[in-house]
Amino acid sequence: MNKRYIYIIIIISILIAICIAEQLLVNGYLSTMETKITDIIEYVGDSETIDTPEIYDMIVNLETEWDSYEGVLCFLVNLKDIEDIGIELTKMKIFIVEDSAIDFKASLSLLLYYIDGYYNLMGISFENIF
Amino acid sequence: MLTLIIRAILIYLLVLLVFRLMGKRQIGQMQPFELVLTLIIADLATIPMPESSIPTLNGIVPLITLVVVHFFLTFFSKRSNKISQIVSGHPIVIINPDGVDYQALGQLDITVEDVFEAIRGQGYFKLEEVQYAIMETNGVVNVLPKSAFSPATVSDLHLSTQENTIPYIIISEVKL
Image 1 (cartoon, chains in turn orange, yellow):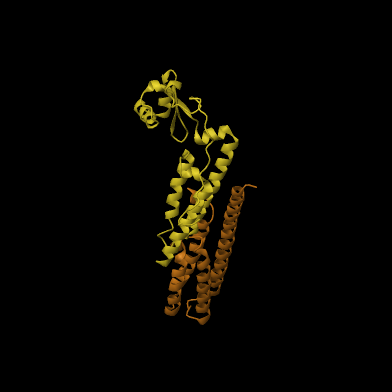
Image 2 (spheres, each protein chain N blue to C red):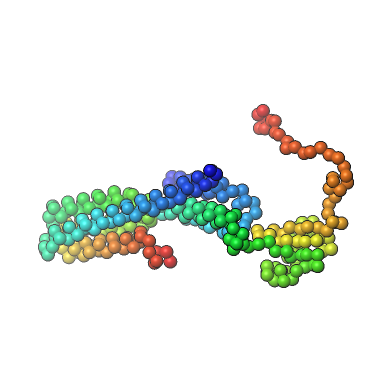
């Protein structure tokens, strides 16, 4: 077989592998984040007080997890497009310390909004192509 | 800064590899789709170079995608005249034994001055010396001169000669 055909087959395989890996990683990471944020929302519920070690630990764990995901996602997406979640998580730690329940809950909703936006940003769609 | 240096080297090597994969014609005379590809590759390669937040893959993936597209275009162009004509067009005769074909010039959107400039580039300064002039798909004009104005060859003079051979370099860079 002509060498060039072999190179092209290898290149096509690499492209397919990158696309599949991207879809799996993005969907996996974002759905995990979505699940954890939803769990936090359910845990907080209608509570007026959020200055608890449990909630703080949840946010710290979420932040650590997102940092690791970001490290992988930065190979696939522009860092500036996905830094909002990290910024919001940092703010939330301050909200916990200040016991600002309203701001904290608003940030949780904002996180879900960002994740929804990332699904659209990283997926294939008519809007993304054009 | 080190990141930028590594990215620049990586992307440069990748572009080099891409051009090697595409063949020597890219460096020489190009078909229109090859010229498009060359221009786009240059642009794509520079996108992630100076911007650290943009993943290098954002430059690499479109680059290698275009290599694949180019491969398939070339592949199908070789196997189908129709596709080849759609992709590259076809050569057009601009001068024939009757003279300049003005209809062809209109089709190509060139002037008579352009034609004369092209045949002068081939070494023919008079229209009377040219039998045919053909504009190729890559924009080059090739000229078939009239017999009376063709350069004489060894066979015209009925001379016997030895066949040419390729010279071999025996010593290069002070090495045998």
